[in-house]
Length: 168
Ligand SMILES: Cc1cc2nc3c(=O)[nH]c(=O)nc-3n(C[C@H](O)[C@H](O)[C@H](O)COP(=O)(O)O)c2cc1C
Image (cartoon, rainbow, N blue to C red; front, top):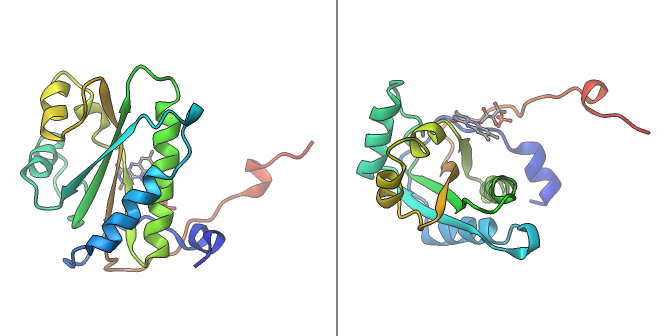
């Protein structure tokens, strides 16, 4: 699948089968994340690989208190953190997470970007969460992505070029 096809086909997956990722799939996703460009090539991002049955995810879900599973019981969640003091970290994390989402699509996997836990992971208990998620010192949570095999296909979202694009 080429990159334009992957962009056109990608859509957030919110229902996964129990099938785990293979080591090759996981390695390809991690490589895609770390191959993303970073401002001044600082490479200030860190990825923590979290299995879907990790107790820290259950604890996060409980703390979020929304019911259901915030990561839709995907078999793997990748948590992206980055240097807090670097001003481009949020942009770089966004680029990395989309690289991972497109790589997942290219591998026939589903994914959903997860930001809903940001307030918790950056809240008053941040250091404890950082430790539980092996987020390096001086780094903070930026964004996560759940990945697994799609249980249901979904149509990609539409958009409005008239409203969203201007030409000079
Ligand atoms: C920064 C960011 C944070 C997001 N956080 C969540 C989330 O916490 N939970 C969720 O289900 N979807 C989350 N999403 C997915 C969006 O809701 C989704 O991308 C959007 O509705 C468009 O749908 P699509 O991905 O299927 O095109 C997030 C997306 C982005 C870019």
